Each structure stands twice: as structure tokens, then as C-alpha cells.
Length: 619
Image (cartoon, rainbow, N blue to C red; front, side):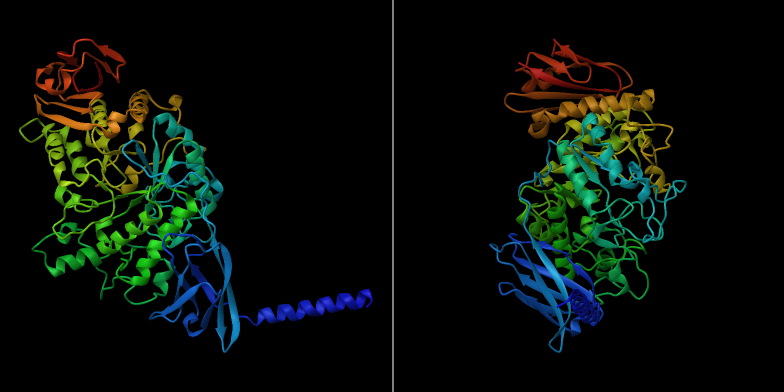
């Protein structure tokens, strides 16, 4: 055969090859999860396939060891493949064929990956940690090139308090050393998943794609890079997970799998936000239905977690992100608003795969018994267990905000702290509570305390030495202000120095003013001391009823003890420690952490006005 004939024959083969390919119709638009792993503890896998009338085709999985079951739903554009993957199954790529009349119309190459068992990941978090909450859009713009995206509806506008400002994952990576300097051990980052809305997308809670990072933050690979680099710096990462609702522009909403995929009413109906109805023995069906099924916002459709396909989808999505990214923990948004039985199954499924993991649920409640209900293995009247170890301690948050501002009385002022902690018997594990001064949804603590640095220091000292797991809201260390009754965007300011053209740089001491450095250094000293203070992590808490606006408590074991004194008076005080003899009598001297000073006489301790003392007692 001469060269010309050979070339012609090859071209002819290619022509018929591509012609045959062109006869295949592009049916499938979405496959979720996009891949999975072999050797998971739970062998069951649900694959959602979305495409034009895909359920009217024949679906075949081309692998003899994979057992499948197909389930159709109301909308013919969806089909669900249930696979049973043996635990000893090896990683592979198998074919899912979409067929009609015996002819393959399209093939999906689906991958079961090998699990990455070598990386240090899924460490969990505990009482030795201090969690730093940051809003990625407002923290640092490390890559201005991704500020806008042609695919995203909202564009960057730093002049709008409620607009997108351009912070991203690279900005967080750029400042990992800042967290080390401050003394933080873990980062809780508000949702990074795609939010393709026209406005108010900076907060991240209206998700439009559960499997992709918003392109204005980066991409999935960049998120994994953040986790890896954080681990290299000794930092853990907590992902903010939203199960109760999605964004109005999620692709589901435009073509629902079934009418019961979301909660629907004849007209827009908002939740009453009254979560106590879930425990109320006298509750009306009207109030309970409104709380459970009403929407958070007109841009946030309420998901129906009682739909078995959606429940499985959400559970798998969380596991997919844990396995893909290597994160160490989760903060669950709006825990009591989603179906509580599904939430319990979700948490159980996570711990089945990752026993060292940890989860904190946002149960925004004002009262302790209602908060405690949402913690795992609590002694609940109905036997319910959420399987979520940590709850967000809103009752203590409110008490802290009030304790340093109110006049002292039998139950007010410093007594607020005592009475809240005296009710810890209600919790199955009071150590597993998230203790915070402020967060992204409430008035900043510096504003609450009327910009009083001394009161702020006392609040910080209490937060970092009491029981529980502390959480610090970004910018508190820089005295950021803002009230929740105003625009939320105003209490979610940009971190100064996070943008290339910022005139002030809060990441370095030279860029902070005198008062900011005073609080930053106070935080840093206490946080870095706390890292190695095991008695604060796990020691028993014994406190004494506040007297004369002074609150004294101890964190102690058989061999170690830390004494904390909070003096909320406008004058210096000398404390006779005789009443504390049951603990203090075995110790001879003390070392005060904040002032780096030795205390020789433990019988009478002098404390300045409006101040805290943290004393390591020595025998």
C-alpha cells in the first residue's frame, strides 16, 4: 500500500469514527456525586443522573461485581442509580450506558477512586482548640482575577455593604501565619460553595451547586490546597454545611425532581423561626408546620429532607466533601430547621466513615433545655439523639454580653454567668459547647460593651478559660464594631489589609492602632498560653457564687490548678481567699499569666478594677 492510500484509509476511518460519535445525543447534563470511592464503610451509593427524559432510556452498569437498582421519580429528567459496592472492591472506572432499543446513546465513565489514607486529615476538633470564624468574601482578596465570573450573576462592589467584596480562598492561604501568631488552632469558614444569586451572595448560605466551590473564591482544587497548607501550619479547617435550604437559582429549582423536593405553599410562606415548637408539648400543627416547612427567605427554598432521595443526596454530598478535601470538622447551619431524624442519620453516617471527626450544630436557642435537646445522647423526653456532639451555646453568649454591662444583683450582672453554668446538668456533655462572644449574625461584642476595652478583656478571659470550645469572630481582635439591627453587611466589614490597595493593614502590628494592638496582644498571649494548658482543656470547673461583683472559679485536677478572678468593679479590690480553701489550701504560690507576675501571698490577692487575673497555682 502506498503512502497516499494509507493516509486516505486513515482519514476514512476517522471520518466514520467521528460520524458515529455525532449520532450519539448528549442526554446527560449532571451526574452527582461526580465520583466516589471504593472501600467505604457504607457500601451503598446513590448516583443522581439528570438529563432530557433520561429515565425513559435503559440504564446499564457495565461491571459484573456491581449490583444496581434503578429508581424513577416524578420528573422523567431524573433517574437514581443505587449501587452496592463491596467493601473489598478495588478502585476502578466503570461504564454507565444510556441505551435505547439496544443501542448505546451515551456512556458515562464513572470512577470509584482509591481512598487517600496517607494524608493527615479528619483530625476533629475538641476543647484544646480555639476556632476562628471568618467570612471569606470579607477577609482577604488574594486573587483579584477571580473577583467576577461570567457565569455568576452578582459582580464585585466594595462600595456596597451587602455586595460582594472579592475575598477568596487564596486570601486565606496568604494569611495562615497570622492565625498562628494570634494563637488560633482552627478555622471555621462561612460557606464557599457556589451562590449564583443576583444579590446578597457574600454570606454563602444560598447554595446553587453543592459540588463546586464558587468560582469567585477559587475552585475545588484551591480548597484542597487551603486544607493541606493549613494542616502544614498546624491549623484545622471546619466546613460550614447548609442542609435546610438551598438558593433559588440552584439548578434543581428550575426543574424539580419531584413536587415534594422542597416545601411548597400556595404563596410565599416564611418560617416563624420559633424552634421551641419542636419540643413544645402544647404545640399547634399550624405553628409547627410553619417553623419546619416555611422558607428562610424568598431566595432560599426550604428543602424537604424527608424525601429519601434528597436525604441520601445531602448525606453523600457531605461525605464527598470530607473525603475530597480532608477537612477536620463541620459547623452545621440552622440545625433545628431541617428534619431532625434526617439530621441524626446524616451525623451517624459521617461518624461511621470518620470516627475522629467532629461536628458543631447551630441551635440558636435562648433557653438552656431547648439548646441541650440538640446535643447527642441528651436525656430527651422523646429519646431523640441528634448524634451531633457539640452545640452552639447561645444562652451563655447572651449571659456574657449582659454580665459585664448590668448592675450587680442576686441574678443580674456577674451572677448571670454563675446561673447559666449552674444549669450545665441539663447537657449530656457541657464541655461540648461552643462558647462565643459574637459571630456573623449578632451584634459585635465591642459594640455591645459600649467600646469598653476593660470589659472586653474580662469577657475574653472568661471565654478562653471557662468550659467548652471557644470561637472567635474575625475582627474582634481588631475592635471591629457593628449592630445586628443595622445592615448585616456593616457588622461584616472587610478585614483591613486584606485588599492590595488598603491604607491600613491589620495583619501586622505596624498597621494596627494602639488600642487594636492592646487587644490583639491580649488575645495572642492568652491564646498561645491556652494551647498548652491541658487543665483549661479538660480540667474540672469549680466556681463560687459571685459576691461584690467579683466572680471566681477554678479549672483543676488532682495535681494542677488555674484560678480565674473577674473584678467588674470600678475600684481595685483585695480578695480574702479563705472561702476558696477547699481548692486553694494545697497551693503555696501563683503565677499570673496576663501580667507575667508571681503571687507570693495567696491568702489575700489584689486585683485592679475592671480586670481579670488568670493564676497558675503552684504547690
